Length: 134
Ligand code: TYD
Image 1 (cartoon, rainbow, N blue to C red):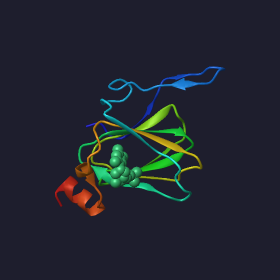
Image 2: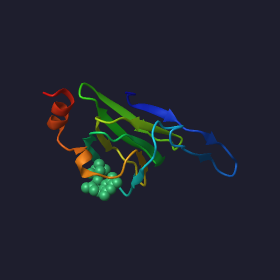
Image 3: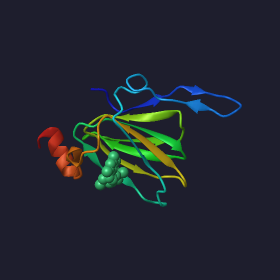
């Protein structure tokens, strides 16, 4: 399984304004079944605080900036997203939180499946035990 990593997207710089895009199974390693976005986050708030059993995601800071903190069960990794032409690939079974949202930031998230609450692990200790059978 591929670990979390930043993926740089195509960008067409143009005097009329820049353009970037994402193709499923090309720039990101899955088929897109759902897109959602997080916006109007009040200063100091955090989102996430869960892992997914099987879901993979790709997170882009379409506007502004924020930090994605991932925990793979052993170590924590922090990714600062602040450009609309790259994003973070998040494999399944990663504890993830998003924080440090700048004013008017917009997080676009592509996922490889429909919303299903049964996919969520919302307790960190349960995440660790599901991961290692502890
Ligand atoms: P949640 O994923 O818990 O938010 P975050 O991880 O950003 O803190 O989603 C919050 C609520 O929104 C969740 O309880 C149900 C709803 N929701 C949907 O109905 N569909 C979706 O695709 C998402 C992401 C959330």
